Amino acid sequence: MCVLPSCEEADDSRIPYVEVNIDLTSPGYWNTYGVSALGMSRRFIRQEKVPANFPYTAMTYTGFGGVLLVTDIQNYPLAYDLACPVERKASVRVEFDPETLLARCPKCHSEYNVCEFFGSPVSGEAHHKKWRLRQYRVLPSAEGGYRIVNGN
Image (spheres, rainbow, N blue to C red):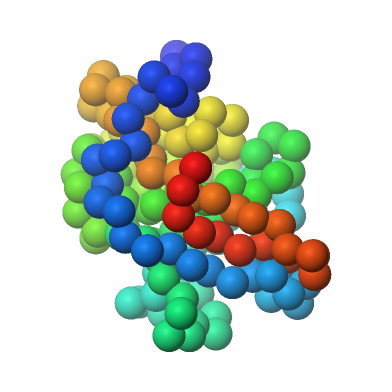
């Protein structure tokens, strides 16, 4: 598998900027809705109420296509927009494979390394054009959980 050596070489601006704010700062929320090990993932899509029992508020925003939450190989949480940068549609969302640790677009079949190389493309049109997933910040809280927000 060929991987771009650095996230600086791939462009994540294909997905429009849309506000992101997911509050998982309390340990209870993090333990219920967060990720704690390599291969785990969680999807947040406010308009579709995913996950169904998540306490969405008026201040919760989940980006353009939704948010994919995973961990890196050192079990630190990482977050990306679910929208494929090739397709550029909020409804065309990548799917995380816990076996390969890659996110794959069901339409164009591009694959992205979300656990090691910050959403860099590893195959398909995205790899050819160097378009990576839009990454969001995962900020630790003093209480023990995390908050997912815009920015790298």
